[in-house]
Amino acid sequence: MLSERRACRLVGLSRTSWREPPIEAINLITEGQYSIFEVSSILGVTTNSLYAWLKKYNQPEPVKMAAVNQHATIKRLRSELKRVTEERHILKKAAYIAKESL
Image 1: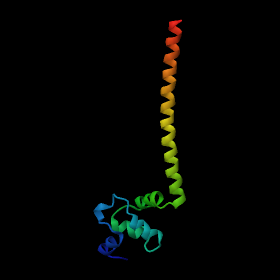
Image 2: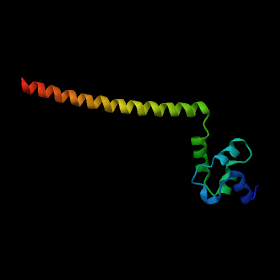
Image 3: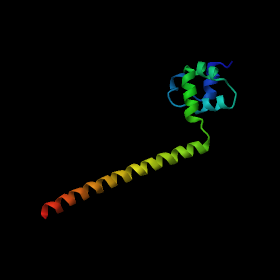
Image 4: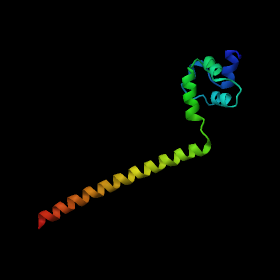
């Protein structure tokens, strides 16, 4: 087992800065150098936090790109929906005014 100081140096974090996602710690775990239990005890975080970070930040590149593309598509569709909704309201007002003028 590593000493805490050496492990934190390897991971690139202090025990108090674990709130930022420890990419180096994830790399050490995924490369098989250290177990999740070792890294969690060294950093002073729960194993559940490390599992959550692994799930969130340790995705293959195509999955990450798909997520980015999906977010861009959602953003584009929301802006288009807003524009179309505004157009619909304008047309409703125009129809009402036309009906009143007859």
